[in-house]
Length: 476
Image 1 (tube, rainbow, N blue to C red):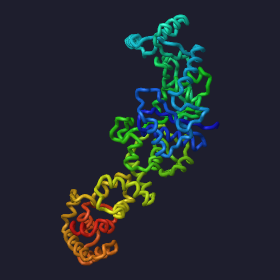
Image 2: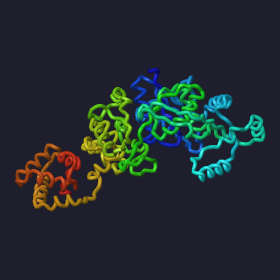
Image 3: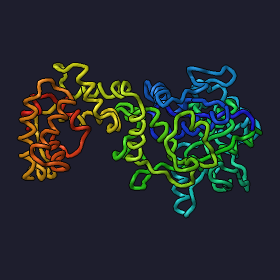
Image 4: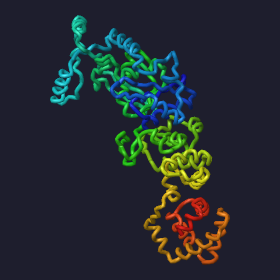
């Protein structure tokens, strides 16, 4: 295999989307597995949709996910640039001139009204609309006269007749399209800006792209792109069209789907770990050998096999993401967990009369339970809210005849504790058990609900110690 060079080519239209991140990830893993180059190119020709800062948002999202490009607009290779399409207009124009000269393209002066009328006529006859090639028959003199008169025009490819475009897709196997199904399509718009299917070919060629991994929605673009490669006598890259990402209702993930957070930045803001997101995204359309699903960044690079990319849609399973992230949270140091979770607590609750040591103790209680940073707010509410609301299950526990017995006895034992520590709280607990003769669930659950209003939680003795003596006795 020659030097592997792959690219992720977003438009600067906003935050890094989950679908885009997955595309970038598989390109990145493939490149790094084969000791190749991962390139980021900005496709900014859709000027009306570009937003200020959109390019940086893409690069920041990739950096957070630990996918640093070998080449990009801020780290260019002088031999392959520019890395923004609007900076490469002269390059596209040279290729267009060559296509015009070879007779593979022509200038089309048809107006929008003319095109709409012709489309309606073809549809009325039951045809699939395509350009009627009216302007392909203009003489050189007629073209020159229209240009001299300032008549706007686009440039169209003259699609070859009776040609079958075949290629072997890395994921889907043999794929073919017939040229008769493709009308003469526009490569340069009237404003002089190239269309996607033309610019992407010129860019991939000049950047020496060897493999193209992209979403399956691009599959139908491939024959148009292969036309340009053949007309210019360029070698085409190897294509791989990845499966769709679907939501839990098995519908295509779209930016209007409110059931799932759509952008990488949202997961960062919620306190997900970048290494967990990297791991989770790798499982959207790819499967490792064996049952293991949690891998480090370097291990994923090492074991990635493009032959294991799926042909079936991949479901974005929110619960699986939470499980993966929780696995990473449990494995990271307490110091890192505190750094992750503490800002969320400080934003959600008034901690002005709380010491850093106390806040960090609260977080430490939930090290294993916390799945993402912002979740700490809900998990620790019992330490900050004075409201003591019991759900139906909690009310059931409070109705047990044993609960007031153990609550009263434990309150008395705790009131006698002089040095407030986990060890002394445990001693009071054991004394309560001995005095009442109540043990097991009636003892543990009764006291947990009476003190925390929750049926489950972290170690009860440690929780009591952090809550503080006055709070616990008042609740009992």
